[in-house]
Length: 411
Picture (cartoon, rainbow, N blue to C red):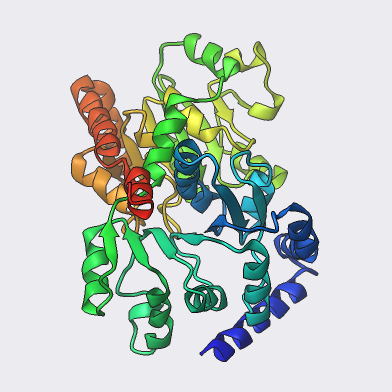
């Protein structure tokens, strides 16, 4: 089994090396891996004893972050080793202050797994959500290093549960405990005699609560909000199908203002987007405290602002629901506002929970969006009711990080 996964790992690593000629992301990843062993040798404590936490990218880091913060709060002498697969996560968080060592994960081969574990000497390993690397997991199991999976969701359509997925499903036996988000995941695993499972929810909810309580200071936006008492739509992580609906409504309703944070904001993308805006707008990168006051729409072309911007919203719109799937609904819902999103939301537990509670609104087309927004603007009690439902859902389902750490450390 190890030899098969080793072959797959080597092939995958070779493909990444080939991709550097046409993919900036692959080039960045490979550049980080070239320096990886030298970096680890210079930064690691030779005594080892690290709690190793692995995340795929930035989203999974936000799910793992409450665990790191809780460990450092209650067990400050523990050392944290944090690894990333994706450069979009590593490059943003490579200086994260609560991790003692931060690096890319080496390619998933037998030799790399052995070398990495020999250097890190972890006392335990925690994988967040979906990132399964067979050679590392099998080596951790062989060495009897306690290994945990946190904030996972399992569905029948996944490779583990298909007729040809038995060998991949075996990897789940490498975990001493699987902390899953919902009962459906636990029930599915039980059908395959995997019973070392606890339902704890999603650690991301703990993170969004903390962000909402310690939001960034945004004085320009504060002044813009104070300059008019009109309702504000804050739309985050949007794609063109989302923007078409949002801008059609915005262009026809002068009584509403818009903060729009597209998922991608290179110059070509922003130029195309703004060609559809028929009212005064400004890019955040071009704005100052005076010029921003004259605009009805702000196009956010900067990273790291969205989670704090939702606090200004009368309504939130979370993009991606007309494509592969919606983005982060909890970071909007935590502010106690109605959260709109498109129809591709069925794989997202929080979106389903928000819909059930009444805090989330799924829209399928322009007509639905217009009708819902107009109705809530006309009937304030509906707006307040949906907002309260969003807030209550987030706070009622928080606490996963405490449950995981208390269990792991048997507190």
